[in-house]
Image 1 (spheres, helix red, strand yellow):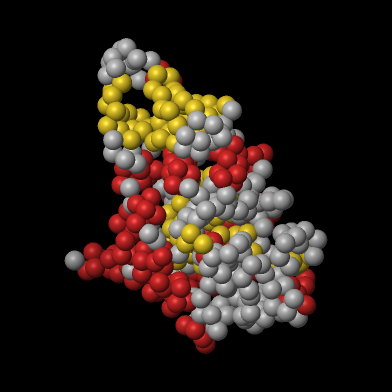
Image 2 (cartoon, rainbow, N blue to C red):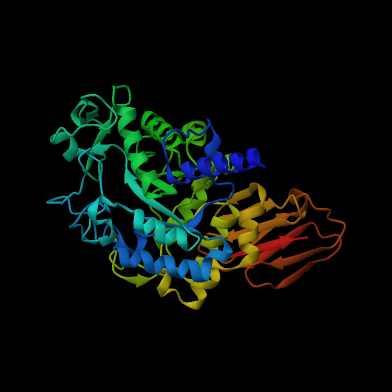
Length: 457
């Protein structure tokens, strides 16, 4: 009885240490792949608010997700870029006179004028607690490197004896489009300690997801990827790692899969048809790398009400037509990309909500495997996957061209017996189709930019 009680107490202490990010808990190499067994799904503030999102807006989107989307598998609330700048702006970045907020160790802290609960160096702890209380998970965006201000002020690196920020950094390789940080030189003493210190901080706040920018393109930063992986593994709290932006080089596929849960294949995707076509074309290289815990990333979903204070264009409902929205969601879900919705959730109309709550589509996204592109020719695309537990086969037929077209797939390529009849269901409409016995193809006549997503029994 006493031994059992003692074991229970020790177990509770260990679990508390992991959940709170206490030192002394280190994850085994590769264990991070168990943290995202299915593609992560959530909301990210970028498409709506660019670098200007505020605490009340984070709460509003979290409330909506908890009420309407959590039961469908949506769970992450991610605060995107420059949460540590007091005076950023819509339509770009304030790089003229930004007011950064840092602590004594050269680590960015949330701007209190935008996130009032961060007062007293509380950081994002209160926001994370609020989100966790709703059954959701909390994420943040950071830039690769160390703050330029910390370097200029020679601020100390926590966990070192006398090493300062200027001693571990270099302006060489600085981000071309945002000048906040310098590169951390991985081989220098104190480099790992700096990354450890920021992820220890995020663990103490209760962060579950970190998107690291300027990491994958235009140059893939192998050494800083490794520093980040080590820092997460030592911090004592599981944090899904997302690298950004694309195009992640295909020759780095093995390395990124060994260190990150998800990685961007492309640059920023906006509500432009050409961006969807680019995703489909780029994805052709990445099908072999779709695996549990490792997810090639199509980028955020620019649907609903976007650019309220965004980086690209005026406030609007998405410019994509309904056919184009179905095609985007069909491509992202059958490919098993992470799904990070970019629109302001409380502004969703019924149609947008329906795209996020289709149970059969999301079950395919969650449970399928063996994702393969059958072909992509002249803008006509066929993609398939299957559910190994149920035997169901999924087929997406997409017309990315500018003309109406019949898009078809050979049933033998789907592993189906052409001599028998198969039940076919359109997953978006629940419409039932039939294939006549002896037929060897399944085909759909599609308008330009349209698609169909089918389940075959």
